[in-house]
Image (cartoon, rainbow over all chains, first blue to last red; front, side, top):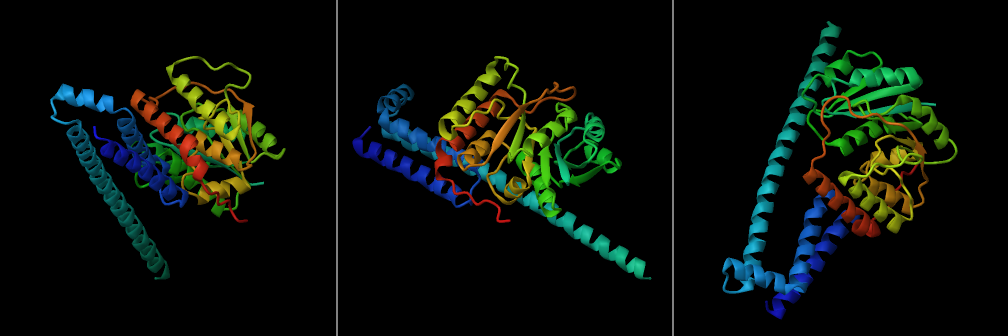
Amino acid sequence: MSLDLRILLIVASILMLLAVVLKIRKSKFQIRDGVFWFLLSALFLVMSVFPQLVMSVSGLIGFESPANLVFLGIIAIVLVKNFLLSAKISQLEYNLMKLTQHTMVESVKDEGEASANEK
Amino acid sequence: MKILAVIPAYNEELSITKVIEDLCEFAPDVDILVISDGSTDNTAGLCRDNPHCRLIDMPFNVGLAYAVQTGLIYAAVNDYDYAFQFDGDGQHRAEHIKDLLEESQKGHDIVIGSRFITKKRPFSLRTMGSGLVRAAMRLTAKIKITDPTSGMRLYNKKLLHEFAKNINYEPEPDTLAYLARNGVKIKEIQVTMDDREYGTSYFTIFKSMGYMTRMCFSILVVMWFRKREASDD
């Protein structure tokens, strides 16, 4: 694996970790959501510090160059994360809708009782 | 002195009534608030019919941390002096509440009921993970906690407001380490807990590993960067 790619991975690793930690510090991020980026950052670091690992796995699978494994791996991770985010957004929308409906129905119920009492 | 029992409950219809009875018997001056976290069984129904407790019935499952926080927000809004977490599955004993209160009045902000101060912790795969977390806490916050995942915790007024207000204040060991580092007084006292009589525990091997990772990330990395915004009353 070329030195350039390895340096890129280290830089990316540090930037990702910093970004997450600073967001958490500003209290705009749940710690549990930062774990993924922490693990990804650690993975990048491992790949760049131990390129022999990447090269042996890539040779085993049959890639022409270990960089291709790195690229494919990152793309695969991004796709999976994207899917999980879709699922999470879907759940959030549903929860929000449920809460909104619940609140609105409750508010009409109160009005109904109030006007019934007035009569 | 107003004291609130915060009982997060997810599908605990088999034990919740007994838990409320236990509290009524051994902690009669305490107001009881059950938070049904999107229970699909009759937990909420049982609490609604029970004159000794109040109920917050969450419209969907929000998880333990936010369920407890909801209870603490209730405590803050209704001007309680103390609030404590109590399990809805029957593992906690109400007889220890007065001990927690007594200890808190000596000047501690958070008092935790620990199973392992005088008794030895049994060795198993699960407890090895706990050992890792405890070591991380000792290393970073210089705090020795024997039962970091204990759900029996009493917060004084200052702390219950802080927990009600902030994000990332889960009732987990990482929050304890963070607060200890910031001068919050945390004390443990020995209590006895029972085993779960009904239902199954939430933790599988995958969830345990995820939990460990999250704790290590929080205690060993995040904690150094956090900025504390204590309550301002």
